[in-house]
Image (cartoon, rainbow over all chains, first blue to last red):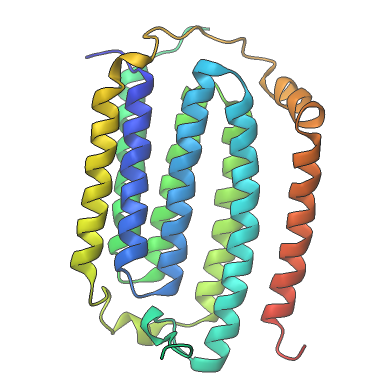
Length: 101
Length: 169
């Protein structure tokens, strides 16, 4: 088989990114939408680390920062989910319509 | 030390990562999705090891699979969702979402086809022992300001999450 080049890693990252986008756009459960966002962030991380293999360490440093920001964002997003669930007893995205016209 | 069976491990880890991704977006039970996401995260850690990034692989396992996913599982436990398992799983405009994702996929395929010969084919093997040291030199040297801002961001996130999840402020 062909030797593994950078493009192979980029294709895997693109596939994960598209799966995450499909999850965000089609699921109704808020927790699964948040997990799809984590999929997107991981796809970006794989891209960064694959390029850092070619062009220096900056990609890995950036990947560490992305993981840090993903942790902060997951904590805040889940806090919002808990506060919302306390009021409405549902984790359905369609029920978040208090500000709809 | 020379790498061994690179092709087999790449396809195995990539296949596991994509399988985990598909399971995340299609499972009815949120706990199953969380476990599939942990499978994806661990496969990606393996791929980072293949890319000679052991520190990022370690951070991925400890922080992402061991921290963030545990947080997700705790929240899934708290928002007890037996009721949401019986409801409809995909929303009304799922077809538009799939078409948008297909358009994005077409765009990415076009990028890959056009840029196929931009990358050098052979990548040199970097020295193995000093990855963590080199990242530390970059992180505390060039990117010190970003490091401090990231710690400030974590502080703000902690305060925000605690305030939002409290029953009475």
